[in-house]
Length: 360
View 1 (spheres, rainbow, N blue to C red):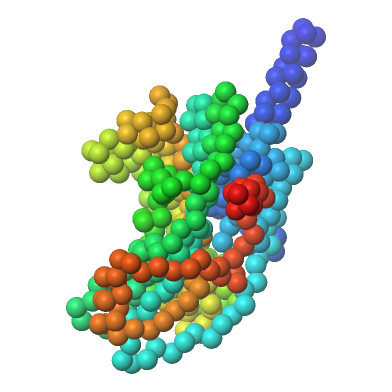
View 2 (spheres, one colour; view 1 turned 60 degrees about the vertical axis):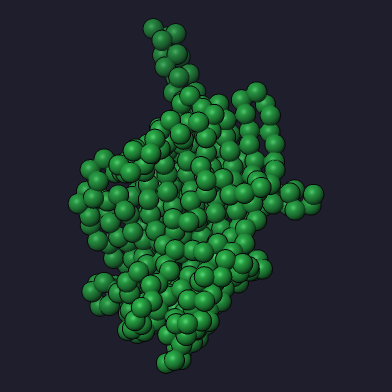
């Protein structure tokens, strides 16, 4: 009986050593921070916090972990922490430019960071990319002009690291964006104007809107930021979506997390457009089960892919419809890499990857 008790204790300790969780909360009011991206010590995205701000399944080898979330300073959690408190970030607010009446199309140039992590039963791949892209957005009623709310990528810097079960660990620069992991072309800015909820307009600092099964939208307002997050799987009972189109193409994908977050410069009207945008993020967690996904990763087992995008506006210019159409047709357009002053620090492992490859 004594031996049985010792065995139980050993199992409990062993499980605790190899599987643990962390909770992420707002340092000000202690509210759970959902949808925060958690990076392991090696730079791979381990997952996103759930509606309660929690992420399970972490091991001792994953620590220290880096946590990134829109509206908060990047933070580091050590192995002895079970809770991490995030401090809200302060943004420098700039004047919003007045739109010239004869130049009704805004060209929004953005710096985009893309973090991708893929894991099979045997291998892991880490991809970090920086992109310069533009969007073309009507800021007044315009006839015969279609907005471009998805990014036109004009320049990219690519960094990658792969690790295999047999011990091989290599860093390299991909020659092109790897379609199996790079989803940057699927990003999209909010199409409609964003309006504060009645509760926020009445003075509340935060508000939630319930979906069919889960919280669909969270919003909060501070002196220098209005931010909202949308959970696109909130109306799914099992919080999972498997688009039929991908299945038909042999790319069976289960989306287990799909969130967008946007931060705006606050105003008295409580209505926000891309002109007010400070930055945005898109997070997703996907399990690839289709034959072409497995083939792309040379795997016999499903592939787990986690993604985080950070979208930072760096420049706006106002164009006539003719100028905008001409520029949109120009497939030779380039753009030097430029960072926003609001950009957040990279996770330590990602910064090391960049430094190593930039030094070669």
